[in-house]
Length: 171
Image: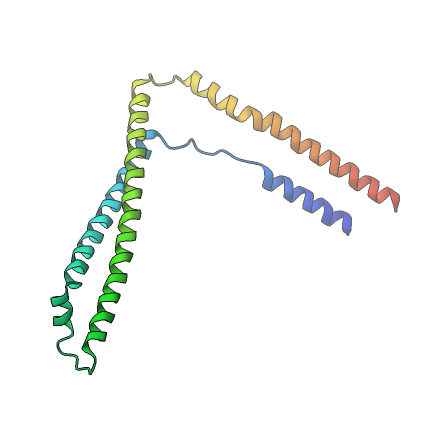
C-alpha cells in the first residue's frame, strides 16, 4: 500500500512540474492597446477624483459648513462645525492620496505605453519570418523540454524507482 501511494506521489509531482508553453506571448501592438485602455481608465478615475476634490474644497469653506449645519439645533454649534470640518478634511486627504496614487499609476502607464509603442514599431519594421524560420524557432524552444526536461523527469523517475525497489527489498 505504501509503495502505491509513494509511486502516486512521485508521478503527480512529475506531472505538476512539467511546463507547457501553448501560446506565444502577446505582441507589442496588443500590449500597447491594452495599456492604452488602462491609461484611459486611470485618466477617467483621475478626473472623477479631481471633481470630488473640488467638491470637498468647496464644502470645507466655513460659510458652507455653516450653511450645511443651519437646520441642526445644538447648544454647542462650534463643536458641530469643527467636527464637520474634520470629517471633510479627512475625506479630502483620502481623495488627495488616491489622486496621488492615480497620478503615479498614470505616469507608469504612459512610460510603459511609450515603450510598447516603440517595440511595436520595431516589430512592424522587421520582415515577417518564413515558415522555416518559424519552425526552427519553435523547435529550439521545445527542444529543452523534450531533452532537458525529459531527461530530468527520467532521472527523477529512475531515482524514485530505485529508492522504492530498495525499500521493498529491505522488508
